[in-house]
Image (cartoon, rainbow, N blue to C red; front, side, top):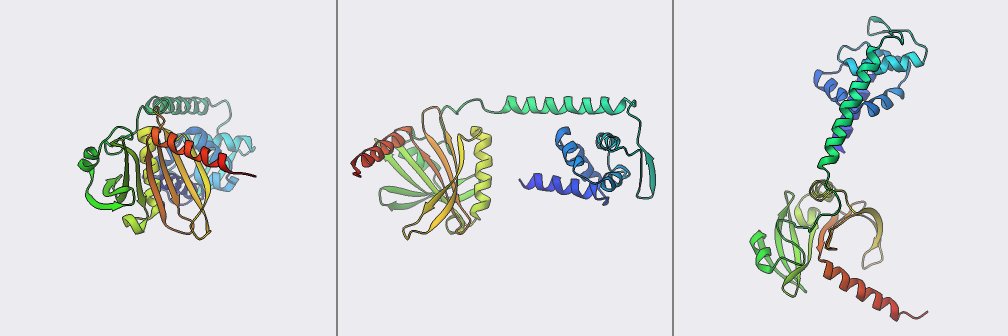
Length: 279
């Protein structure tokens, strides 16, 4: 998101007639053809002429500006102390360059698609810890510190995605059933908003597009309501990896890994509880 904001700022500066460095111009030229053209179309005639006469703006962008100005029946640009005529439509260099750029964009998109994981991952792992498979020995091999016991969970400190965080681990039949870590300044010293963005990006690169992303309402023990951003992946075994971020009023979040067996057991318990309700 930060990179996109920087690129949009570069576009805005260039189209306002501001001085554009060679590096910024390269960022602008690197944009996909369709996105660049759509943004150019939103600009006023004077802004387009300023950009058209700016020496930092290169061929692909100039050609797109020419096309938009022709559509607006503008044949000449006077800006930044220069006068430039807009080439007639029979100048084929515009079509050739745009077609070439679109072909390049298509190849980039195809390559990105080839690198995208297809279907759910076979089985999740975080630092080599796999739900329903890993033992306590596997967990201890990756833990930075043993923080003792808290209820039914053993607490350890791990470094995940560059963030130090406390994690509670529950076992069923000697295997990891639940692996729940806590984020936010209180737990890791880092802003929860920042760590959530980094973790979502990292796990998306590792496991592919999340199964679902949603905003859900949650309440604490005192009845106070909060908005929770939740991102969930599900692997082929039925295990879940879930990231939660409550950042509107409190800086707190979590990273959770649940085995398929643990999820089935909890769903069955919830259904049994619902069946007891009388109305």
